[in-house]
Image 1: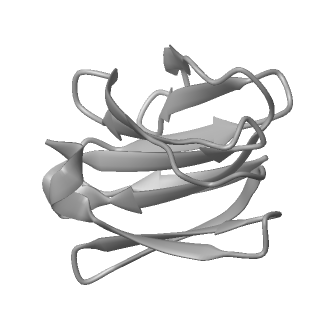
Image 2: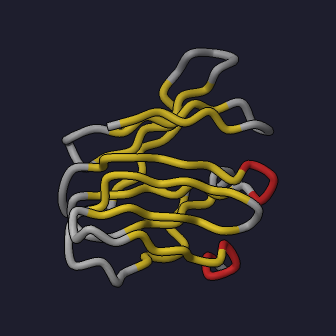
Length: 112
């Protein structure tokens, strides 16, 4: 699991073994939304707040791209042959690390 703070609309995103990502409103401390779509544990989160994007890694071998204002999945990135266990976002690129012993760099533009 993991957690990621999103600037802008004040939300904290959390993920766990239940395959769900939850958005929490930091002003009210209330549950704001539940993002679902992974078929296995959600293992890591990374945000690109200036574009309102959240990336989630899963042991289902995928990285999902979410819009953090409308709480919708925009895209699923595939290509790893093992579960994903790490994510990073830097300068418009997303990096995923997998149990298949590879790292993939994805342009963040692939989210649109």
